[in-house]
Length: 102
Image (tube, rainbow, N blue to C red; front, side):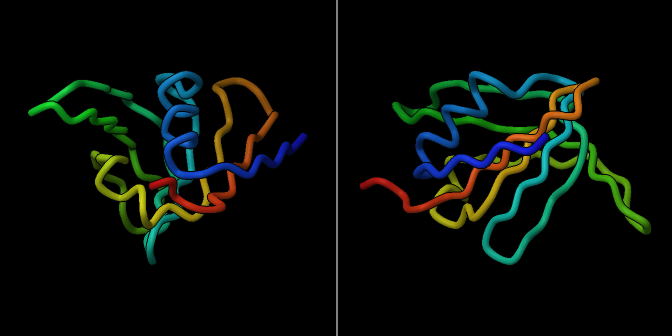
């Protein structure tokens, strides 16, 4: 089952902080980049008075299998869509980014 939600980029990052866990599947679309894979880690911290939210993903692909880390705060203005499937479930949450709050 697929559930679609429309929200701004800040709310989408909050969704990831609160709902995405290790071993979940995630598909991030931002700018011209598509990153599908398994979540290795979600890390939030405050650096130099700035909140960060980084997602480490084991990228799934035909020719490329590597681990990358994406700082969502740095790409938030370019976020287009996020697809989240919790581990062991078939329920997919699709987050469509409507706009980024100022």
